[in-house]
Amino acid sequence: MANTPTPHNKAQLGDIAKTVLMPGDPLRAKYIADTYLEDPVCFNTVRNMLGYTGTYKGKKISVMGSGMGMPSIGIYSYELYNFYDVDNIIRIGSAGAIQDEVELMDVVIGMGACTDSNYAHQYNLPGTFAPIGTYGLLEKAVQAAREQGTTVKVGNVLSSDVFYDADETAFDRWRSMGVMAIEMEAAALYMNAAKARKNALCILTISDHLYRHEGLSAEERQVGFGKMMEIALELA
Ligand code: HPA
Image 1 (cartoon, rainbow, N blue to C red):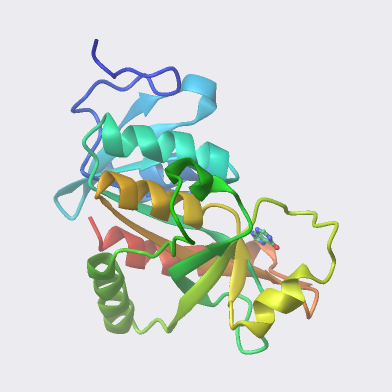
Image 2 (image 1 turned 180 degrees about the vertical axis):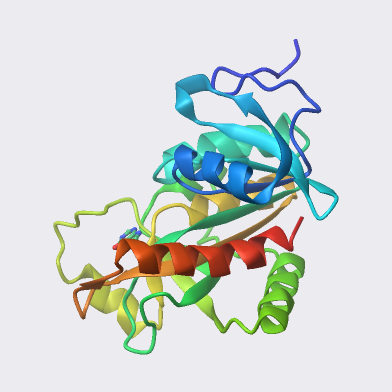
């Protein structure tokens, strides 16, 4: 039996490009398709997890929402890699900074993604797996940022299962290990990519600072988002 369509994605094999950008919010995916892509065609509406394929600078590229958290991006990215022949998934999202030198609006790239999740349990490994972004995509992203005059901070992020953490000192320990920022999806994406022998990268804008209790205005969010998008689109 064919694996496509799936219970979560009504696209047919061939409807989705080899490279997919994944914001968390499906309406962000629609906004990106409408704003940056030529001739976007919607390939998914199941659960309103909107997905579009179009072209950017003549190259075919897709954009689809991932939802929030590792179970959600885990499902969608698994299907894209294993059932839709997708090679590259670039998560584009927001994160909360936990280092003094990481500022609001900074663009952060997760070279590695630490996690408090049990996602790797399924692989039954005899140790701890280190989820990492794909070096080739990382190199291309850093190069694109340099050409665009955008400074990027590259290092470890934390993919957490909890936004409202009952352990109020958990951030302090991740901070003491040099982890730059917290988000909720990269580690699962990197593990799915590793298992499928595919490529992944997570590019983030800092939307809030968890120690300085600062947040971005709507306008600042849009500017920061634009800088991240210009880098991500170059990976098509
Ligand atoms: N925690 C988790 N994910 C986030 C945060 C945060 O503080 N800010 C933006 N995404």
